[in-house]
Figure 1: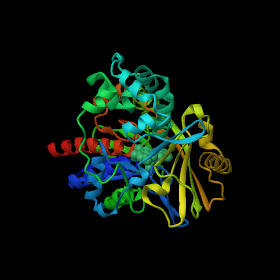
Figure 2: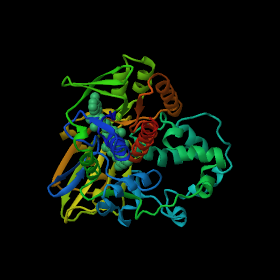
Figure 3: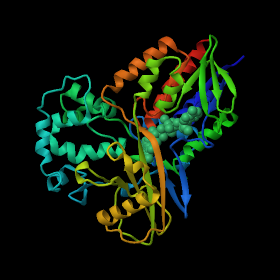
Figure 4: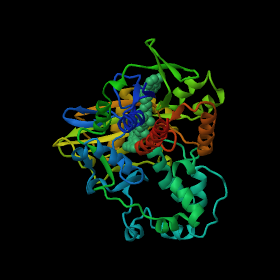
Length: 449
Ligand SMILES: Cc1cc2nc3c(=O)[nH]c(=O)nc-3n(C[C@H](O)[C@H](O)[C@H](O)COP(=O)(O)OP(=O)(O)OC[C@H]3O[C@@H](n4cnc5c(N)ncnc54)[C@H](O)[C@@H]3O)c2cc1C
C-alpha cells in the first residue's frame, strides 16, 4: 500500500510541500486539507474595473530564497507568465517631516540628499563599533548600538513596519535580518559585510516579480497540479496520534489516516490542535503572535502625479495612520489610464486600524494620499480587505524557540512536520524554502522505507 502524507492548509506553504512530494515521490499518496473554499491563503488577486489588485502580497523578491520560487515557477510552466518590475519601480521613498522624500540610489546621491547627508560619517563610525555578544536582541537594540538613533528611527523603523507591520523593539534581529546579525559576527560590521560578504549571483531580470494575473497565478497553478489531492472546505478540527499514523478529523466529520502530516497552518491553529497532546509544543506555537493589517487598494482614472518608484514607508515619528503606500501601477503595469495605490494600515502599533470599518479606512487613506502626494480627486474605486492575524511576529529568541520546537516534535511526534511563514521568515520565499526542506525530509524517509 502507498504511503499517505496529509498536508494541513493550502496557502503557498502547503501547496508547495504537497506539490513537491506528489511530483518527486509518485508512490506517495498526498491529501491536502484546506478550510476555505479557495486555495492560496493570503495570496489573493482580483480584477476590479479592469485593474488587477492584490489583497495580500503583491511581489516576490528574486534574491536569496527567491531562486527556489523562480525555479518552481519555471517547472510549473509559468516562465512566460513571469512579470518583473521594471526600472520605474526601483526608487523607494520615506515620509520625512510630512514630505515624501526619495532615498538615495548611489553614494554620490547620499552626500547630496538632505535626508542622508550625515550618513557617510555614521557608516564610517559603524565599522569601528564593538561587536555585540548577545545570543539575540531586538532590531531596535541592534541598530541603536551600531548606527544610533537617526538611522534607527528614520530608516529602520519604517522598513520594519513595511515588512513585518511590527514593533522594532520586540522583533528579533537574528530571525528578521539574519544576514545583518551574521555580518556583525563575521566581519565585525554591517558596512564591512556589505562589501565583503559573497555576492549572490542574480540572473533574474529584476529585483521583484509577479505573474500575469497576479501572484494567485502561482497558487492556482500549484492547486491545479494537485488535482483531487486538494480538499477544499475541509477544516481540520482534531488530530489523534496512533501507533501506525495520525488520524485527522475534519469539521464535516470525515476521518483520514496518514503516516505523516505536514502542518502548513497558522501557528495558533496547529498550536490548538497539538494542545491536548503536548502543552509545551502548543504553547511554543501559540506564543508566536500574529499581527493584523488592513489593505486598501485605491484606483484613480486619468493622469495623476504618481512618482516613479515602488512607494513610500512611514516612520513612527511621523505619527500617521498609514504604514506605507505602494505605487501599485508602477510595479507590473495597470489598466491604461488608471493609476492604483495600495495602502496598509494596522500592525502592532496601530492594531485598532486593522479592524476599522471600510468607510473609516477609505477616509484615512484618501486623506493620506491627499496630504502626502497631493492626490485630490474622487477615486474610481476603493477596495478594502482585512488580513487578520496574517503576519507572524518573530520576537527576540524566536530562533531558539523554533529549535526547541523541532527537537520536541522530533522526539515525541516524528510524524509531524511544520512549515509556514512563521518558521524561518515571514515572506513567500521563506515559506517556499521551508516547505522544500520539509518535503525533502519526507521524501527521503519514503525513499528509505
Ligand atoms: C497584506 C500582506 C502583504 C504581504 N506582502 C508580501 C509581499 O509583498 N511579498 C512577500 O513575500 N510576502 C508578503 N506577505 C507575506 C505572505 O503573504 C506570506 O508569507 C504567505 O502568504 C504565507 O503563506 P502560508 O502558506 O505560510 O500561510 P497562509 O497563507 O496563512 O496559509 C494557511 C492556510 O491554512 C488554512 N487553514 C487555517 N486553519 C485551518 C484548519 N483548521 N484546517 C485547514 N486549513 C486551515 C488557511 O485557510 C490558509 O489557507 C504579505 C502578507 C500580507 C498579509
